[in-house]
Length: 443
Image (tube, rainbow, N blue to C red; front, side, top):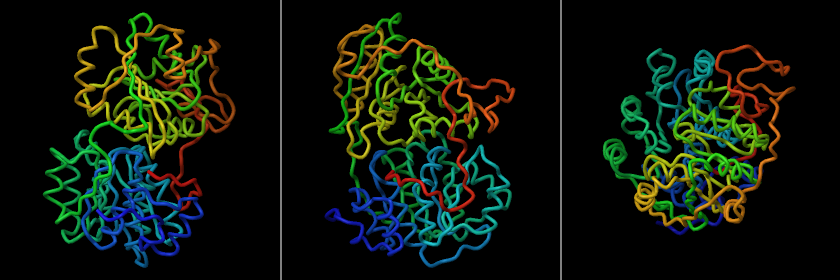
């Protein structure tokens, strides 16, 4: 691996891209960026092992935008493709790359489920240089004839291990088979074994491999704790941790439990919202926007939904329900301690879960500190910043908020199964122009 670059100026990026990065306050490349961009610009297939928070979005994004520089897309024929496992991740990758694409005179669009197929087809018809897509919706466009992949000269696969876990690899293979065999492929994943390894051997040619993260959660800035609680105390302990200052993500196993926990937290005065696959894409966008903007500081999420959460400054991850396995532990833990920031991971267990939890943390390469706690204990405050919730139930958001599909004027629209949690003032993010003027994210 070459010596990390101290500045983007030395990586061979076009002047317009460099200017856009400076305007966004991004001046020094992260290790994964300085390692992979030169090889990608040289036309090599690249294999990058990196956890979330490492800056890999800009690693492949800057390489793709540079290689696309100066070309023109034909109708329905994108020139480059970024495949991601979830809608949320697609939106957040777009937040990073759309302003840079606009600065380069390129068109960048998203194709994901839960959003208007017709609008996506219209955007594809006008010509797209860089397409950010989830496998399912892109396959739909290919079948309907609204997108042809024969001009895709560059493909980036982001979080390939998660696509494998979610069962998307058959669709990914079908998509790759429709792109030119001579095209360039960039693959980024936290792990490179199993099904991901097979994908690499099948579709990447003599790839250059760069690894900047271990396959365990042994991040220097991440502290791991296990709190042993009784079943009676568990809800109160979770509420005290959720009431802390700072962004907190709470993980549970089912969407019904996510809704229930979020409701319980709001009843005791914690601004919480739930995120899961049972919500519409618009609802999920608004929940994430409120969490990013600080209108809610506790996000209750399921594993599948949370795989698209890439929010800076999440200082604590709380496993209300312990994860199923070590891989889920690593994915959950990766929501904090991003890009060198400090973070804490706390798991709540009852006495009957101790042995299972010990095996899981051993497999994850983690040596947590185990503490027996009860509501109000000083150790809760010392380790997790826990504090007593106000106890005052939070009213539903009124003007300017649209929980679960409410109207822009703040009045609720009658609907079945509307989730009464979280402040939904962010609004669904529009993707009708390559701009967006949003603050640059590094991953």
